[in-house]
Length: 166
Image 1 (cartoon, rainbow, N blue to C red):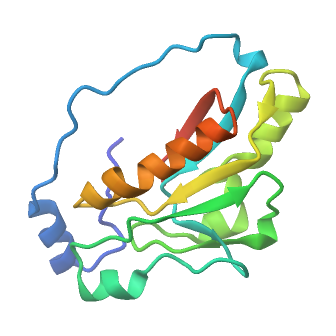
Image 2 (image 1 turned 30 degrees about the vertical axis):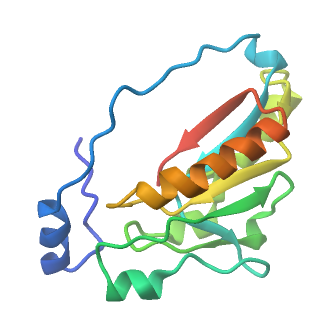
């Protein structure tokens, strides 16, 4: 089954994005776990454009509407204790209705807590991270924001990160 990443865009805008050059990653590093998953602290990192509705600004959709090739490269911290009613979603490239009904469809934080209670993972990290996906120019995100998230994951002694796209 193919996924239409442009489904929620006007046709002319979808055609623009489909024709735009996209940087292709080089070799993607793989790091095997150094201990059993049942002993690991696990964090979530998503590209679903999530934010804490009443505490954090949403991702900048206004600028993206004005400049369709730009995407907000920043990130938001999401605490492990987040409740469904605290979640906001700002993204132009997927329908966020299901996310606002059940965040676990793109950010399985409550399933992660269940995995900890069942002993499948050692701990749920205290902080998780959300980016807004669909970044045509990833330079600022990769050079500025990703290192900040990596530093914070290390600070929290996270052993594994589960990446969830929207």
